[in-house]
Image 1 (cartoon, rainbow, N blue to C red):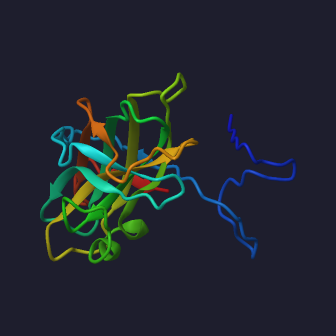
Image 2: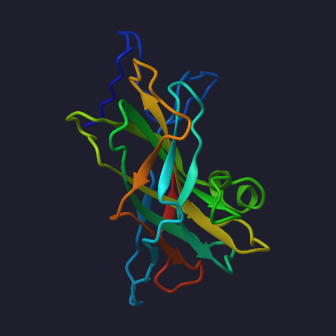
Length: 222
């Protein structure tokens, strides 16, 4: 079963499954489905590189309608990446908006970056990985003060797969990045210094599969 909902949806709107081909253009965002398929084999399971140490203890909250400023929260170093390697990434972020007098939209994404403290995937990450270094598309939800499916504190889960298509000349990093924007700020009480707290319980986990492994890497598919 597949469904989609939007408060401004009209009867003639459609949910498109697949790509908009044949000259037809879809106005709106696109979602993504990532699949890692494992073939049978006798080799030992790949052990992931895991971190639960946050590089930043807070997430900046911008004003309602402003461009979200993403910040690297968790990062895993990937030295010696080789063409054909396939990566499977699993991450979780928990944050608390606390006593701010509004709800906040929280956006997260996974990127391949040259800097562990950066939300950017420009430079070599755009040249060595599928989807130009973007592993999981930036999306999110409203973290609410009142009861909801995402009431405070709010947990976000991100997963993705990525194939290395070119040997990078330097060490790269997988970063879980996040940003927030005030929502329902009817009294305009947002302040430029507002932020959400990164709480315990988050992590970033990266599995690396070499192309020549006997047990064969998972096939990355979008």
